[in-house]
Image (cartoon, rainbow, N blue to C red; front, side, top):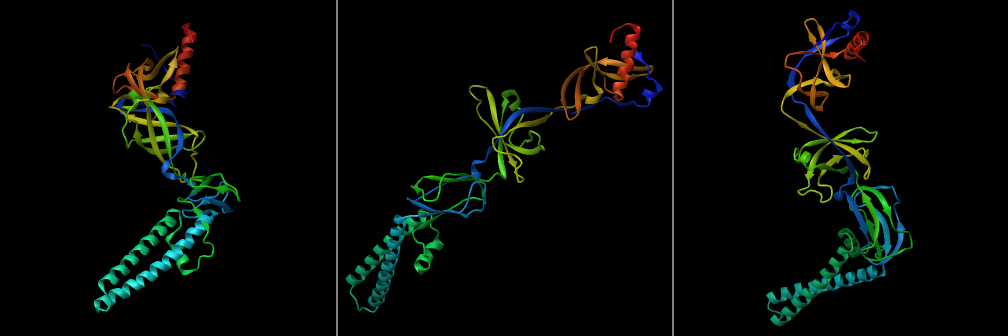
Length: 349
């Protein structure tokens, strides 16, 4: 194979390296989409029928867990609160009567029949009180609020406070002041995007290369790449596309990734060691891919057959032998020298 001589100015810019075997990573790239983590989403509904009296937040507000979102006035709740207070008083009276009867029975002052009657009445009032108490708790009242009711310090007993169960951002508000609501009405949606999911679809043959726990790279359009673990590979292929759906869980503390935005997903497989050259060493001459190899008499352009590319390296399948010295810097200068000789000799450009 013809060798060329490098002029001194070019020679000074050349750098060579012995060809060795190394593991060339195989990078799989697929389009992906950012999605909300369902565990980080709260659709907040009313548990009672009533009318919205106050709204404490608006779209875009950041809220903490337990923060009030709205106050709902409810006659039904007010009636239930009154029932609760009456039931509490009746249960207290019945308990006192039962304890007194219990003491007198021990002293053989009251009959067994009287004792049984007092105990039955006490248990009956206690069950009714607990039943109403559970209804109030299921409506969303906190135990601290019930204690305030019992102490007479709760001035707005008919107001139901709607709170956020998670910390996050209000992304939907479906209610205004004065609006009537019923149980199950979705009034707010709060999401926490400090952790998001990214989904992608991989061809089956590529998906087989990966497992849960492998680390991928999420590349947003115009943003900084982030790494994330692969947490799910679908056990069945998509019926239409015959691809495998995969999911990554991404820490997103800076909120840079936005749910529903498109991203690129990259996964890397490191194969067995094989001969490889740096990407800048490979060039095209007359539509032939090859590298410049240092010979005793100069430099020769050697065509090669390439394989995987990744991590700045290209696998060489044919054309070179281990130990040959490859030009890795100054390739463009050598190519110009070669093309100039071709033109001068009439071999083409």
